[in-house]
Structure formats: C-alpha cells, structure tokens
Length: 177
Ligand code: 5GP
Figure 1 (cartoon, protein in one colour):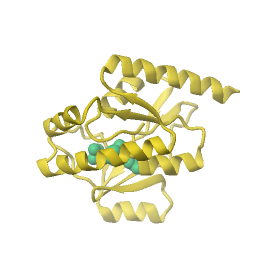
Figure 2: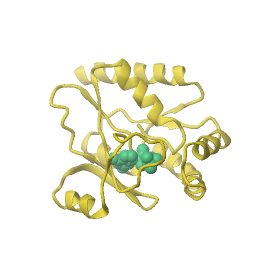
Figure 3: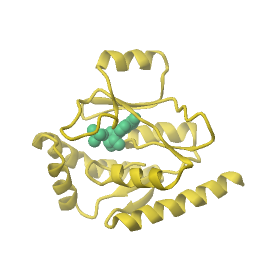
Figure 4: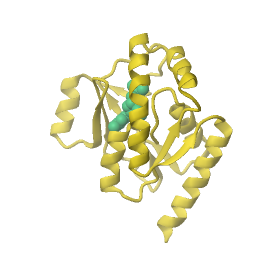
C-alpha cells in the first residue's frame, strides 16, 4: 500500500488488518523520530547506525530513504500463511515488485492537494516537514502510476476499504490460479 503522506494509508491499512485475520501487517524500521501522538509500535525506531548495520546483514526485504530518513521492511516473519501487508513508499514498492511481480500494489490518492495538506498539518508534523511532503506527493503519485499501481482516490474511508477488500479477494483467487 502506497500513497503520499496525509492520504490516510495508516487508517485504511488498520481497518483492513482488523477486519481480515488472514492479513499480517509488517512493522517497518525507521530512523525518523516518533511524532507527537504516534503510537510506540507504529515503527521500530532505530538509529542510523542500527539501520545501516541491518542493511549490511541483508536484513531488509526493501528499504529506502525518504526526506532524509531511512525506512525498511525487515524480512517478513508472519510464521504462517497470512498475507503480508506493507505500507511503504513508491521506491520500496519498486523493489518489492522486482522480487514479487504479482504483489497487489495499491496507490491511495488524496481527493485534493488541499485535503492532503490539511491532514498533514493536523497530525503533528513540523510545518516545514509537512510542506516537503506536499511537495514530493505529485512525483510519488506519478511514479506509482508508472509502476502499474491500482489507484484509489481516498475520498470516503468505507468505500476505500471495501474496494481494497475486493482487490485482495481478486488477488487471492488469481494466486490460486
Ligand atoms: P512517515 O514518516 O510518514 O511515517 O513515512 C514516510 C513514507 O515512508 C511513507 O510513504 C511511508 O509509507 C513510507 N514507509 C514507511 N515504512 C516504510 C518501509 O518500510 N519501506 C519504505 N520503502 N517506505 C516506508
């Protein structure tokens, strides 16, 4: 699941995982500091040294640098046959698609740049971080589309969740052949 900051990815993914016991949400590592109000388990928060040590040990399925911070997906260890959900940026999605071309790649788009800006400013990002995220959003959307993502405009949470659930059902039946 990809989409620019403030598009509501976290909310959509939390709903998908809560409503489908066959989904397993991967927890990323990041060198970013925790935002005010962000839950302790949103990420595994690490130093750049710790992150780089894990890169050196081939400990990530994918990783990328986004606005000066590193983010990475540890090799998934669901330990069962649940489907792994990644909430990552488009650079990470490109790496995952190389390894797993059949992965379901959803790109959430904001209904408008204004809505996105309002959400970003409201969630505790320092204003200059919020502005940088808005500035890179158009490029992220264009890159996601270029990589063949299925795009969903997140203008209604329930509708977005239902659309994602339909796509997951389709992807599972395609995987069964
Ligand atoms: P944020 O700082 O807003 O939590 O995340 C910034 C961006 O990094 C978002 O697009 C988010 O989806 C992405 N991100 C979070 N975890 C990972 C990860 O493990 N790998 C990659 N490539 N991007 C991630």
